[in-house]
Image (cartoon, rainbow, N blue to C red; front, side):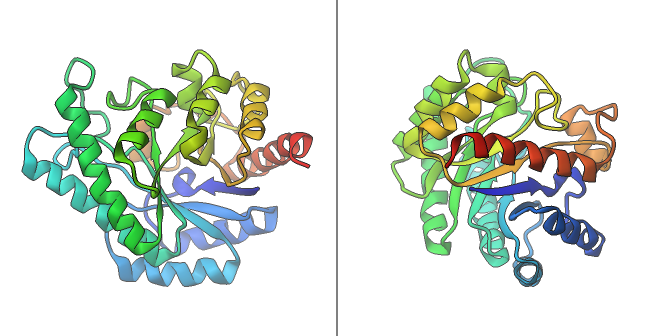
Length: 283
């Protein structure tokens, strides 16, 4: 098992101000980081990839799609922009040495139709993501598609949705990630959700119900870790937490109050929590 932390706790773009944080995370004991990929400059990510190598940090990347480049839009041109955006993010992920590109890039974040997905939207989503998966194969990055709670998207809201989506795409690079925050809202049973994802599960976000320090809230942690062990998960467990460091991220995640002592304290306590839970089960 490798343990990582999503850098959106500090930044939404990579610049030199994050270097002391990276050094600290490595010192604390992290194996990996998850980097934001919201700008498409492959040369920049190549430079950062070398820095990550020097620090000995594995990495995944995270990206999103927004209105205007929605892969399930009824407008074919807009769907094309969504596919192109995902391919560009994959190129940057590959340049940075990321093993996975994760996130809710299956559809536009925060855009709603007033009802659930139509048959056409599902078909467009599958077709769009199959094109992205084919490009992922070319650049040797695996997709970790993320289902979100119903307040953030409407195409994929449950593990069952995600498993069906991957089956319909039918490409080995199209896999699902599991996020404890979204599952805590949408799933009647976290264990059943993880079992449903077993054939396509590649990546896990460890995220508390209030998006702060894992292990200090109301997520049913024993159920989650027991099920992850049961299905044989042995990939990256990445803490995804949000705070007040970035105005744009705080607004998007609806974080208005400070819920931890400091970002580094969250990172330290969260890593200890993950390692303790894994040590109880994975021998």
